[in-house]
Image 1 (cartoon, one colour):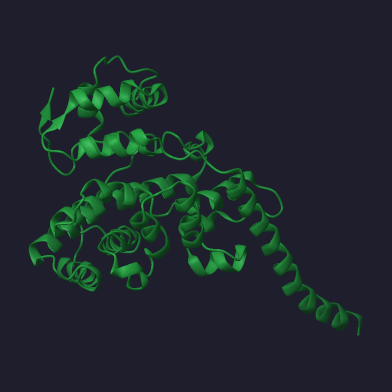
Image 2 (tube, rainbow, N blue to C red):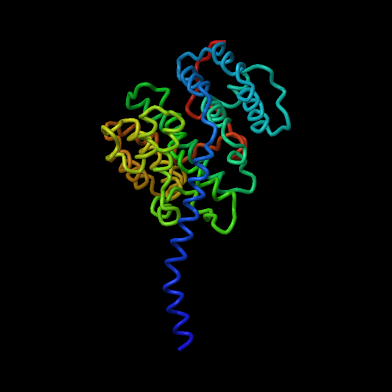
Length: 320
């Protein structure tokens, strides 16, 4: 009788305990939002615009970087990490861009204002996975948008990089630990799981942060609707592009590499289905090329993996 009573009590108390835990975790998230995070410097958007030009005017890029001491420091530290040294002996910005590559240079500039605890992957698979995924989505968004003729092109990389902006408060809660902390699997962007554990998901949080950071409306729409682009405001083409990039990046976790596949046509069909749903105007040749690029892997951003060759998507013309 006693055991039966204890079992019933456990069944009754279980949901109540889960609700209390969810309320506590939600309170932690909201506390992070109230404290706020430093928004990206206006220099980030200006740099991205300059780096999307062809040719790239390094004189103008250097002027923007040198005017921001924190940005300059972040660039040189990233060069040292990529080179595997304690400090980088280079002196000029054009050397840094050649070493890092345009995409990784933009990554460094775009995240350097965030708290250092969210940029340190040491001992944290969550952060490593999150930033590698965000970087991959940024690069793929840039390529997809250019192929589809999206304008302005400078929106593409940043919208892809910041699409999971709402994950940052969740990561903050995870890294803080404690009895009410979420589990590492919460860093993977599972919306239903986030709602169960927090009462909020990273899409809603991203919309709130985008408003607080005074992001353009198109960026906020990306944060809110990249998992359901059909519901985006005015069927935003930018949201559809980032949603396609996100789906392709996530598919890399489930599909083997194209180059090593024993059944390349099946993989190509899988990628084509993703593209066909979200970006049906892309040519078959572009879809095959994208499948190859995603299958081979994009390599990590600086500090989140082994040093890699720069220039995955080809060279850019520089004006010094």
